[in-house]
Length: 417
Image (cartoon, rainbow, N blue to C red; front, top):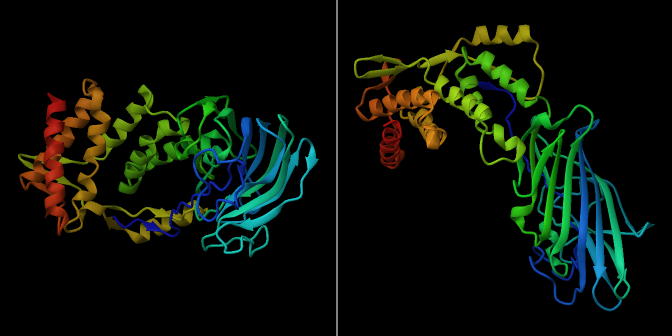
């Protein structure tokens, strides 16, 4: 397959916001230690982080308001604390208040030799930096103190698929565990939860009325607790599902996209398992890949070509022009039909087995598994064709993949019993 794609679908992760951390320059360079820092007797008793995702004039924006309730368990003390920005200075309107009083702060680069930032706020760097906003914080003996951090995060992007998140593990340096941490993700303007494609972690997550809420109790944060959000800023899940279903009868690439979309349907809600409806959609998409498969005795044949599908990335293309271009482009070779590229199709058998799993007794799963087992068996018998040409695996991949497929086919046959 050589679908015409005029803009690559690149993902650039951007979880460049995180909990406040103690003494960031004392532990530089490198990541903050994932443990209570020696000499720090202040604990983060609780935190409340509000994330609001929306479209901005020049790109997407994540508005952040993070409230940290601190308790000094020891004598009066003053030391530097900070809020990490990550490798880019893409935070706007940053401010920090302590007990309602606005603090002065400084932008530093923990990766720099002297700790000074070499760029102004609002610029983007593409070399490695470790930017932090830092300020002096005082804690009276046995006192309770509240820090409130606010800012807007610019979300980097090269396509309609975008990533962002919130890092909790930088809060590990405070004394003891975080008593309670609550993170909420809501949406504004043209974006909604329907645009989300993947969110995590599943731990502590509840989804209700279009809002994601993570609640952690007695949290000693690690990287596994960090909030990750992947979304499509143009199309909702339902819009893409409708589109790919409509196109699947014509374009091989749309059949594949339908598989990838339905495979991750449950991840939109941070769930580890699919619902019955989600599983049915996924099985139907996997089955749809072989709906054109023909059997003639022991010979199994898949089409070698399909109409070209024009994909202009995140740029709108007039429908009339798109159809004209597709007509002029004619047929394109499917990815698996190239010499030695059979694995482009056969690799999907692993997904078939995973979908079957504990669901092999379902009628739709049985039908799907039967057809895929026939296709795999035909490959091993030398009877699998793409059009007039035998499908093969070339080069160094042959022995490795053939061994994997042998084990998989044995599993598939066992599931089908």
